[in-house]
Length: 127
Image 1 (cartoon, rainbow, N blue to C red):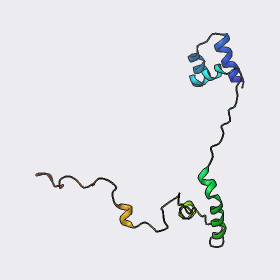
Image 2: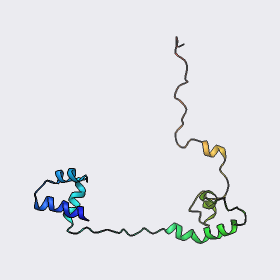
Image 3: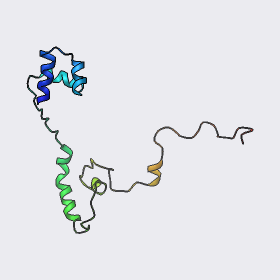
Image 4: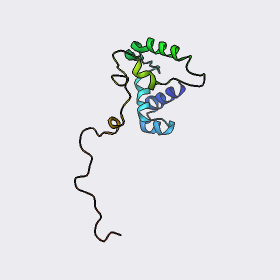
């Protein structure tokens, strides 16, 4: 709070440049400009964003955690991986069904073929 008043006094009353004040006080020039715009420093509180997906699945997650409480020990934690496919009938999270991925699906390239255009061979004389 005192720093704001010192910065405002130096720039507005003493006529010191913004750049000099920023260097002297060790604050960015944009911060000095911000302090000059506002007569009194105000803390701005941002409104938190809504969580529509979490609100939709929160009840189901609580059900699953209470159901799994008997199957896990105190040291174990239930993470998002087992919860995601089971949270909602519409399956917003994870795969559209509960089947595990096949190895061929996980490793198959999507889109273009990644093989080289011509066969790789050694150059003559290369040791």
